[in-house]
Amino acid sequence: QVQLVESGGGLVQAGGSLRLSCEASGRTFSSYHMGWFRQAPGKEREFVAAISGSGDSVSYSDYSDSVKGRFTISRDNAKNTVYLQMTSLKPEDTAVYYCAADTPPAFFSRRYYSDEYDYWGQGTQVTVSS
Image 1 (tube, rainbow, N blue to C red):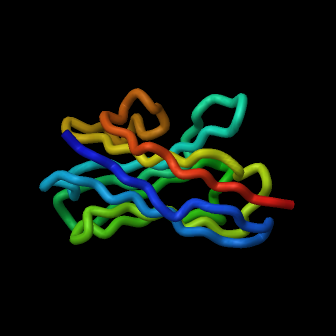
Image 2 (image 1 turned 90 degrees about the vertical axis):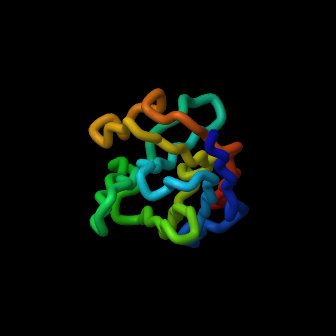
């Protein structure tokens, strides 16, 4: 069983920045692919970013078109934590943000699909005012 706890959400003005954190339990965190999704009121949950887990030092990341160039996903395996650095925030980024873990066997090729992920955090609210 993997538990995920997000933090770092809040209220920010358009153009501002926030960093979300997601701490995971489990002794094999480095092997998990990790993703961030978001859900705005009245909308479906959507993919935001993902970062691969691997046994070597290289991690691959990917982003939705709507956040590419503004958001950065990273991980610190020593701290069992994945981050989402969000800059140049827009009102349309307002949503509940969820982190998710894809545990082995994990397929990074399916990173866009929420059903690929095995565990989810409780979500953290991000509100961007205009």
